[in-house]
Amino acid sequence: MHDKVHQAGVTERVALVTGANKGIGLEIARQLARAGVIVLLGARDRGRASAAVHALAQQGLTAQAVQLDLEDEASIAAAAASIAAEHGRLDILVNNAGIVDAEDGPPSAASIAAVRKIVNTNFVGTLAVTQAMLPLLRRSPAARIVNLSSSLGSLTLNGDPSSPYYSARLIGYNASKAALNMLTVQLAEELRDTPIVVTSVSPGYVKTDLTGHQGFLTAEDGARLPVQHALRGADAVSGRFVEASGDTPW
Ligand SMILES: NC(=O)c1ccc[n+]([C@@H]2O[C@H](COP(=O)([O-])OP(=O)(O)OC[C@H]3O[C@@H](n4cnc5c(N)ncnc54)[C@H](OP(=O)(O)O)[C@@H]3O)[C@@H](O)[C@H]2O)c1
Image (cartoon, rainbow, N blue to C red; front, side):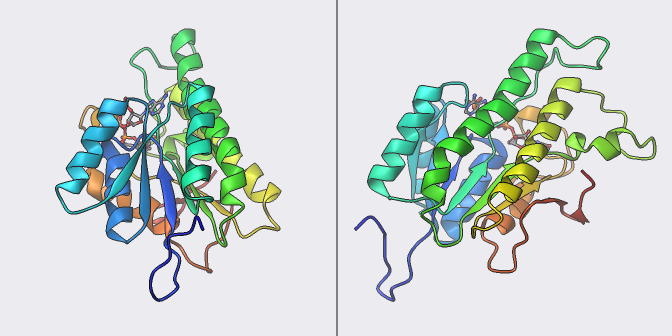
């Protein structure tokens, strides 16, 4: 009874995008809605969620607001319960929400409080959301989990002086994304015998609030690869770390 079924009998996919009130997350929500997916627009602030839903509606796109704060386990549990009640399953989870902190920096100098906060949000919070949504994802015939990682989370590139990412020594942020990549690898292995595909995606350097609107790509461009992997069909390979040019080294 939960499934939204087209006349042709094809079931519409249901996607949750975290941190979808702005930036890359909002663009992912927009592109998934355009692709005909039922989009649950996650945001920690109800007002910001409603404003984003309204902005999509003005373009003729439908999304439903879901209050979800990665730092608040009660909000995560409530979001999972409401998705279960309304949709009965989840086909796509885009773990997009994430932070940087101006007090982050190299290992010798980064604020420990800032590092704790970044890792707690980007890694522990994402793990908590994923755990809570997993029972719903298991009810999908072919669920996709897309983790918004960064090439800054590549252990290999952090140790490669020829890499453009080498000089960005942000121990908190980079470690949070390396840990997120560990989630991708371990979860892909744990779910090996299921149809669920888990992917780490590095979107590129995108002009958003997170980068102070520095970057090479618009949020629309930055959303393309995560959306592509969220919608990937039977050829999807689990446990990969990808950027626009192909596989990224772990
Ligand atoms: N921009 C880039 O160049 C780039 C590159 C590589 C990876 N990424 C990753 O891409 C993702 C999106 O980044 P962005 O550039 O679009 O950043 P952004 O514009 O700053 O958006 C971040 C989103 O995450 C939300 N968020 C932060 N903490 C949260 C929490 N505790 N609970 C729920 N939501 C929370 C924010 O909500 P509020 O509005 O309430 O703060 C916002 O919706 C992040 O994971 C980032 O690390 C970005």
